[in-house]
Image 1 (cartoon, rainbow, N blue to C red):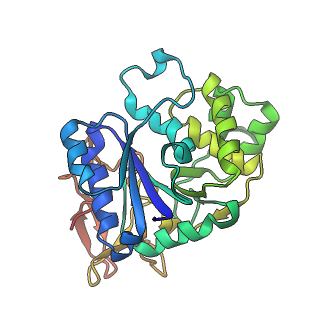
Image 2: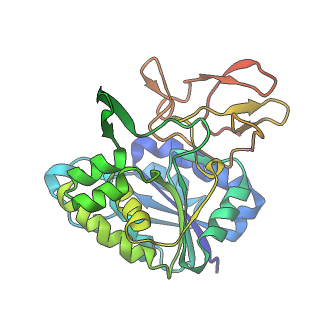
Image 3: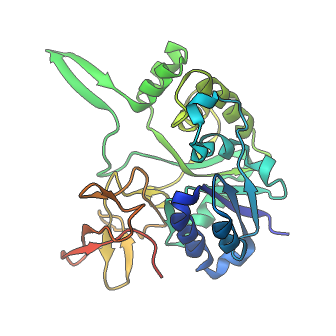
Amino acid sequence: MKSNVIVSLADANYFDLLNELVDSIKSFKESSDCAICILDAGLSKEQIKILEEKVDEIKSAEWDIKVPESKVKGKEWLKSQVSRAFLPKYFPNYEKYLWIDCDAWVQDWSSIELYFKACSNGKLGITQTIGPGYRIMSKVKWIFGKLALIKSQNFKHAISSKIDIEKARKLAFAPHINIGVFSLEKKSSCWESWQKNLKKTLSAGNIFGSEGLAINMCVYIDDVETEFLPLNCNWIASNLLPKFDSEKNFFVEPYLPNYKIGIMHLAAGIWDDKKDMRIDKSVKVNIKTLDNKNIFKSLRYSI
């Protein structure tokens, strides 16, 4: 029985991305020792049939925490905002869980190994959205002299979710954590902490982003023991485009020493002429190569 599992979720609109993620995982021989499980949030019968040939288990995602129907009607994909905090419930036969959003794909297996190592002894394995060249998430508007209005993603979400002001302030300048890729052991106490915080954030805030706020609360308020992994383990391309190593044929970080990107994440989309690369694979963007040339290239997975 396999003890490690990689889990993702998609609806019919994001099937192609999910299928590419699965193919990218299975392109590594090491994947034979790791299960792949899928949460179905509105896949078609034909799409499920394709996936059944490639993955170990497929389960229908549920609303594990009750939310107002008016907020989620016709938006089954929003189940990802709730169900990923309950992975051991859906797939109980594994010891370590690695979640990867369906708009990400694996380029280097060493990142997978790091995530499974990071979550040992009950720790949370995850990355922060802060690093050399990354887009700054907080915004400052200078009003007069030394007086400024500061906007923080964590603080904004905390206030809209009616989180206690002292806790919201504690979150305000904590480096934002991206929940799109994370690892946890089955026995980790983080699951309970996350579910508790998620019930709170869902009760008053918006559905989208609620689980991200909840996991930030786990780390910065509940002091869940966390192993922060390097950016190349969850490279968010909308924050900073990678470079391309034409000689070795893979994407790398744009700054020296140009580490190979392990997991490419297209969170928030990569846009060109109002077209999102996640939906339209023909979309290409200008990427610099290591030998200082410009090429137009997709960031989607391709064989």
